[in-house]
Image (cartoon, rainbow, N blue to C red; front, side, top):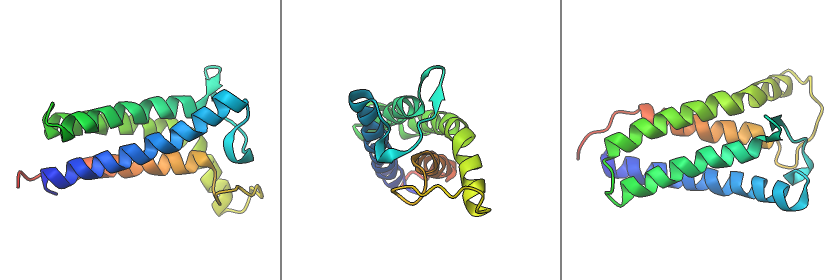
Length: 139
């Protein structure tokens, strides 16, 4: 993957993740209910979407810095790899059991978006993590 392609891809993915988790966080913050009428998982007394938003925001800032050449793409890639790995582990604690139950038809909960928002957050983090594993070539 070329450096420019990597930077544009990471910028797009982190922007989408930030917008998605930002919407979930803002909905919870201002209405006191979780978006899409879903159950709201909590971590250390706060909604999990707040933490997801923080992780995505960190990655978005790093991607913007790489895009503007304020930091090198290789440095951004390492940061994005670490933060997305944390996101995979964090969101996975809710998403993997929900996905397992969905696949095995153990959970008959119907979500507005088809799957839970935790699963979508997990997928975003996982895609960013996988993109970070693709080698950069300096073209």
